[in-house]
Amino acid sequence: MISFEIPESIRQTVTMIEAVAIEMMRPAARYFDDHEHEIPWDYINFMHDVLGAAGGMTMAPSQTPEDGKPRQDYQQLAHYVEALSWGDAGLYLCTPRGGLGAAAVAASGTSEQKAKFLARFKGDKPVFSAMAITEPHAGSDTAAIKATAVRDGAEWVLNGEKIFVTGGHKSLVDTPGFVVVWATIDPSAGRKGIRSFVVEAGTPGCTVTKVEKKLGIRSSDTASIVLQNCRVPIENMLGKLEEQKRTTEGYKGVMRTFEATRPLVAASALGIARAAIEFLKERLAEHGIDIRYGLPRSRLTNLEREVIDMEIMLRSAWLLTIRAVWMADERVPIKAEASMSKIKAGDAVVRITQKAVELLGPLGYSREHLLEKWFRDAKINDLYEGTGQINRLIVARRILGYSREELS
Ligand SMILES: Cc1cc2nc3c(=O)[nH]c(=O)nc-3n(C[C@H](O)[C@H](O)[C@H](O)COP(=O)(O)OP(=O)(O)OC[C@H]3O[C@@H](n4cnc5c(N)ncnc54)[C@H](O)[C@@H]3O)c2cc1C
Image (cartoon, rainbow, N blue to C red; front, side, top):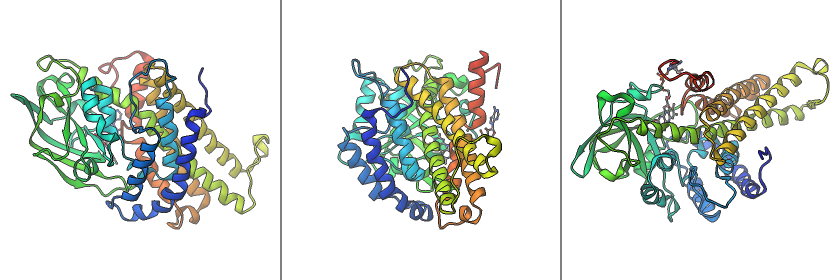
């Protein structure tokens, strides 16, 4: 049965994460916002040890059913991500032991590949991974990527440019991690030529060329990567795919990865949104304004109605998120639900943080408080892993029964 409460087995760790958020993340949030590109090693090392102590868990959905055990890995992650992002969304993205690359391996790799590439997250030192799909001319239209992979004996030779890779620098330069690179093995085959390749840190021909300066989530590095005759072993192509065959299986791996991670983006958005609402209500309470829940709407002040509407947005988006991760734990496909949760949460966090800034006026706009930062951190949740528009298309296709060709 679906429950919207935090399961008891997860609550303990959430309580511990909340303490980290209060004691470590909030105090460091402004510093790392001001010092973009400085790596928050204290947080990274601490979280590596904390997650290690919590059973060596990784920050990527496992996708591996453990028969006989209640499946709660997605629900667990969603609660952790929400609590960490309540602390600070940029620092949350600097949490080791996983990342998008690990999620891609979990979604598309064979059991041997999972064993080989995911083991490093449980080692002594923090390790990162990333996923590189976006190119200068290919964002929403992922099938338009131009990076190529050409087979040469026992290796794949990769060439191309990738941009806006979250955690790319940490995965390739700062730690012995990896980036999962999407490339085509047949440029004339569109989606049917796309495959994913694990490129490990230190591989010759793979260079981080730039780290972005950004509006928000500034403590998270967002890198450009150039691949120039970059050689990886043939077994680094994820999945058991016949390379000669034109198949959309490789492309479906991207979609499986997003299906797994979009509800987690939603959870991150809602951590920020909750922080903004709490801050707003605390400031209002300091001025003697408490929200009179339970009164008819017509008897509430406009301010009270605004706050209650923000809370409705937050809760309804959270319910969609919890539904998506609960279904994922039940191993029910969540293509539409994953997109729904991300659309709703992406909208909610942008509107809630904007409204909180508006209602608090100068207090909301001032850099003395974190609210203006949360307002900046919010927007990314509506952009990466599929913009709001693209996720709406996915949901519409699913509900109306249209194919990608019929509705794009
Ligand atoms: C901070 C940050 C981190 C990122 N991290 C990663 C990462 O780790 N890995 C990675 O591969 N990428 C990453 N990205 C890239 C991100 O996923 C893309 O920016 C996003 O997919 C949009 O692509 P685009 O920027 O090329 O915009 P475009 O695709 O050019 O879209 C521009 C606008 O047009 C709209 N649009 C496009 N097509 C349609 C359509 N068919 N119907 C309706 N509207 C449409 C879009 O919604 C958007 O509003 C990151 C981006 C940022 C900003």
